[in-house]
Length: 97
Image 1 (cartoon, one colour):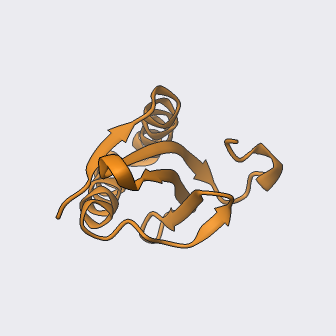
Image 2 (cartoon, rainbow, N blue to C red):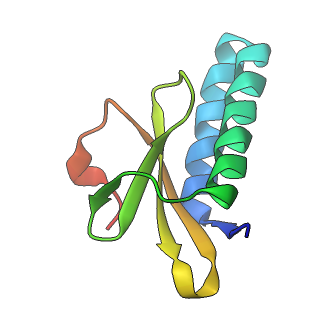
Image 3 (cartoon, rainbow, N blue to C red):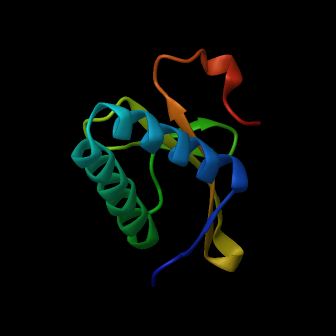
């Protein structure tokens, strides 16, 4: 069964900021980034049990881009909460908690 996906305001803002950055370089690149994010969302809805990084937080890479999606699963509600779109060069101490 497919899980429901909820994207936090923080994650949405981080995705939009990344898209703005890529759009300054090349609009096609920004669209490719967004397409990769959507692909990750589609995969997570079907199989959300990716690598745990801390307690119940999980992480999945966004294609070839230097970003990871950090999320939490609420199995009882079959819900995935997207918490952050985290650039891989950032210090992991800044992961959402």
